[in-house]
Length: 541
View (cartoon, rainbow, N blue to C red):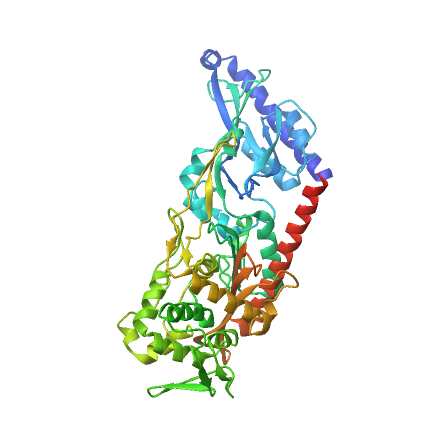
């Protein structure tokens, strides 16, 4: 406190000396004439881009505040600031004030009122923990233009809705504010209430983030509404915060990468596509195959995860127990060409566009020519080989199964909104019929069976039931002598009349201990609790 008082006293003496010298100069004929020519000097206290909202119009940015002051070279103003700033902050402000012009500074607490001092509580774009950071994105180094996520995709719209607080001072001919004349404050911050509305539901986003952080170290979660394709939650781990980007730039875990938009080896979640292709070719669910623990195709032996074999299985049992030999046999009966065509129809050869200018990585599938090889077809049947896709692609696939074979395009943009809160909704892309309703119904039953008494029992919620498919994909990478495996669980909830598609990716599931099935289960149960609580609240109103 004593040091700050000394600094403030010294600054006041310096400023008083400058003022006295200034008075003396103004008595001279040259500057006396110039002082009569008053000018105006404007400083910007705050500037705010348009707002990014969730689907319920909860602001994801611009909703927290900080204190700012506009201060002139006035001794009383300096003295007031000395009570709410540390020594270094005060020195910096005094140094800037030596130019004789007003400056704007951030303060943790508001100082006492004083001449030459204006105080404001202003919105700040990023402060504290930001939900869905990979969706919202961040600004460039100058904090002016969008550099990633929605900030980049909708940069023009958000810039058009910029609002400001400015202070205009009456100044002398050399730009110094004149004492005794009240400055004019202009506030257009309400303009920044316009912006874009995302499909993200903040309530479900928080549920997904908590579940992901409980079981995943690196990975992704997507929660989607099947009928509309609206993405209600998107999580990528590890995450970051826009307020401390520099801390994440050199991290070996690459937290700035959006893993939900990145392509990975798929593994057995792709068996959904193989089953669809087979059923559409007329192969019945009753198709039997005797799994002895492996299936030889040419000179290559493909092993089942159950090395002793599952014995005789039909399609539902082969799916529920994720038997590789069964699906190899199924794909060879279906034919590589038909499996390729079904995969392409379901989007496994291209990126997914979530809004204009916003897309995932491109999914990759072996070419039609490559699939002339029975071994390549066998490999693709259970999601191995050259196949890669993003969690968004897998969500799109599950949604088509829920929607009776109609594929909807996943979306992150709900609409645009004016400062007066008038919203223009983005029209949904038309659904595309890919396979029959009968095939979809059969897949849903198989997926429910998987959760009830197959490989997906770890994802079974305590109520409501669910359908899904597990997957463990070999990447071919080895770290510290251990193979890197990608773990998946993708499905729908509840089992009857599904309302949510949930896809979970655990990147390097063995190396990081990531477990996708419990993430799925927790999200289902938390969503159910949320909906139950809201229903009770509605009844009590």
